[in-house]
Image (cartoon, rainbow, N blue to C red; front, side, top):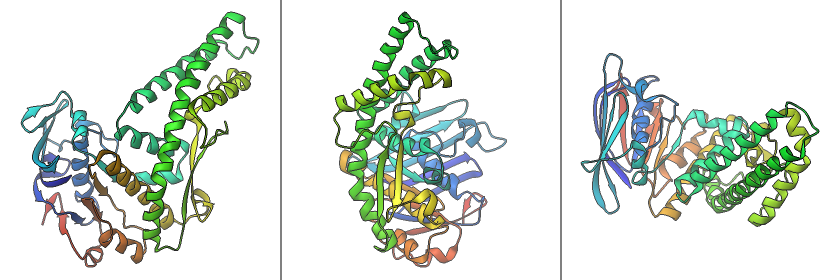
Length: 367
């Protein structure tokens, strides 16, 4: 798919903006001028919330009571139009027809976003890396989002029951029966999550290997591995994973009662990212960490295209920081197949662009 043009009104610091886009789009200017605001506005058409964590009301220009966004885009071999109006809530139309919710636009418009906040995928805790895989699986469709929701409910129910014991490890037989029921629910749903996460990492591995090799000029090798204290392996079936989770929960019951929480399951798992066999959290430079996140995001876009038949838009916010010239050159001139939007502060960066279009933004305007 491709976004051909956008119109923004009363959006953040952008009072009025109209822009026509190319396949590769470089948006440059000083900090706090509106570069990220433009990318954020594009991303909202995927049906997701702001990648900056903003509430709807926070994207409306100060002193105004609404914001309007409109794009013309190509998808499904036809020209389409989508609009968002943000006031007390966000409403959406697609080709002139009002949608039930803005989130439903995600069925037509897909995007992969990189911003500096996503460095927490590497620097942060396991939750950030789990979230990357889970969000990617949700974009691929199916029932994964429902599966995550059902699993979270099952863990919450088990935790609630455990907390009522108030640290008492001598569990009465009737209560133990209830715990066993929730153990089975957590294990059954959790095994499906683990299995799908492992299959996703297997599917994305060739893409991330190829992309990271391009970014690093072939000098470094990236690796991904699913990690769990439950020690299920990548070749296990869903029933085998379920059995292990159930066994570990039974073994950890006393510890769970003492800690008032469920300590086994996919909500405690992690994804290890390595360069040349070394954990990037500990041994990688800032540039290498940024390159890893970028490779993960572009690999996500590649697999999304393979599975859905549609190229997602790629939004790269401040990706050039802390990347050497070789890695910047790969991003600017060697990424193919997707429409890409890149923000940067340094005008010199765009001088190496061999194709595409540039936009200079200052004080919320293209100049």
